[in-house]
Length: 308
Ligand SMILES: [Zn+2]
Image: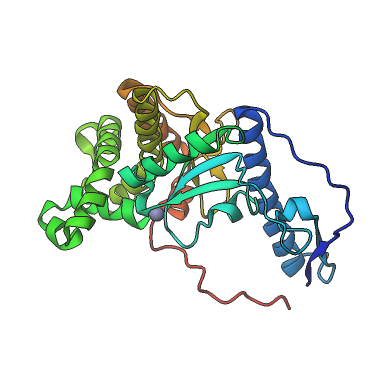
């Protein structure tokens, strides 16, 4: 099977115009859908009826964002800023199917709002405000930083070993707001019968915290920008799900749930969101829940089984 990127330097130069936050959000979601569709077609052609047919992806100088001729230097003009995790499995441009000069990207383990990230965003808002239409906090499922924060919460004795340096503790501590909010939501759901040390409880807590942590960073970011009097692009958040490759704001595929969601405005909205997540997660069948959230269940290291 061939995947062909077909570059046409003479394609019409129609500049993409992204005029507001909603158009920017739509562009990001369309890009994520393109990635999902591409992978579906690759899998279909690996195992299905259309084996052998190439997949052709058209590229023009503008969609690739690359210079058309030697020495051409583009003006920096991203339409979205993205605060994402450093996890190597979640390359920001790739999961949104965007290219050079589309995204202003900040990556840090656990997508926490470190002061340097905030400073970078202040820079972007000051110097790129004509093009920048939305700010996205992007978490992901099965996040190592979130898992470490959950483990320090569930096993305080192990805290010093898990977060063994000042810098690591700083990072893990920033995620505790999300861990505690998620734990509280799960405890309210389970009542007195919660299986606190159980592996499933840990997996559920990691699963919920991935979403709540993205919402916490978005809330903090929105507050910080408001505090500094910045009237800028909308702040939204979402989570990249490894099983579906989909960026979403609920672990269950509930049709009306937005793929990217506005940042919560206050603690009450955050708590409502955590409760909503727990209900959504518990609405999945036990098998689906296990498949999606038991941390060690799946691996991409397995060789692809060949079709007969
Ligand atoms: Zn991560």
